[in-house]
Length: 480
Image (cartoon, rainbow, N blue to C red; front, top):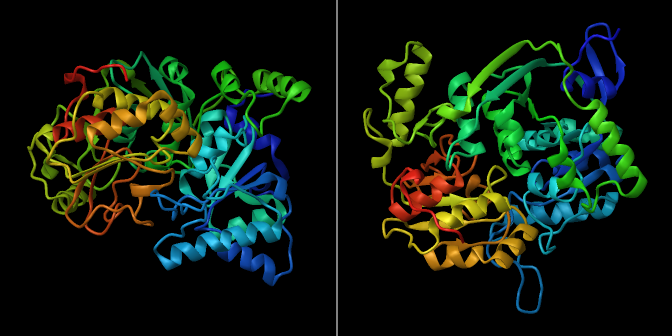
């Protein structure tokens, strides 16, 4: 009788081409997502060695990091390149490389363009049971579909281009079981921030985390993507959620999903195969009680520096670990915060709703409910809403969400990575403090000297209206 296996065990086993005695395995890669930042050197190496892309039909290019979120075409319809010459060159190079190597490119003027980790699932390019890679750490997002998805470096990008394989060693199995149910206005973002706060930024080191339990099953696909997206912030290589009817309903009919008889064959395989067996071995299990989670916000410069909005900035002396205490002291110095300050007393100057973590239609709807009929505080210098793709932007406009934001005083932008990271024109200035729905609050992440507080879209919207961090549960929320 076959030993019980986890979902990760099964996907790993199904993709082994060859395994050596030391445990190193050659793994087949089903899907390769690329963007403009981590591919130029890999394409150059292909040319230098006169190699083709092994499976261009399994590769999808989506420019996102360097694209402008302001208007991209002239009145005549010609593309407007980014103002930064280096960014413009990277985008031009991606277009040329994709043309030369026969790779499908969703150009910046294409209505489908957006953030690669939003567009992949949206197009049905991400499928259960597949291996998905991208030269971007937040590839973990695609694990929401029961895919083994992880970020890779430039040399590995070249290896996948050339061979459609990678040399890897199997990681540990970790399970996060979430019991109970999330409360009013508590989202997947609050949940994953709570998890990271409990296990730490290195809690998942060397592991693939499978999320399961009633609270996970209740999440939408958008929520599961948010959850898996930030697995990397817990130190894990990837996050996984077993596919179910919500997964199949989301994928059915997508442009790159299987169709007809092939869809039924695929769905039956997923249902019969893609789950962790009863008795499967996990190296580590963490149990989380969803009922007790309050809206979360970060106070420091790591995603593990997180507390409830009802709490105060912690005192570094309260940390028993010397390294943690020293890191907290440095964080508070950079963030210009004092221990004991109520989180709800912290004023912000910028608000960013977007990123591969929280830019999907569910996220925009949640934020629009908070801002409807209200105005952005005079204390806010800039408030941006950046949809994750052109299709999401069009859907939001069809639902009237853009009017909610614009009437409140937000800027309604084109799709892209935007203010998540300082690689395009959207930056937080030195000393600026941003309520952000992105995934990282590192030093200088949103711009040199920028101070970032991570939170959910609803919480970011509440911060924009109040000019400071604010508990969204205290606000009367209307329907958009």
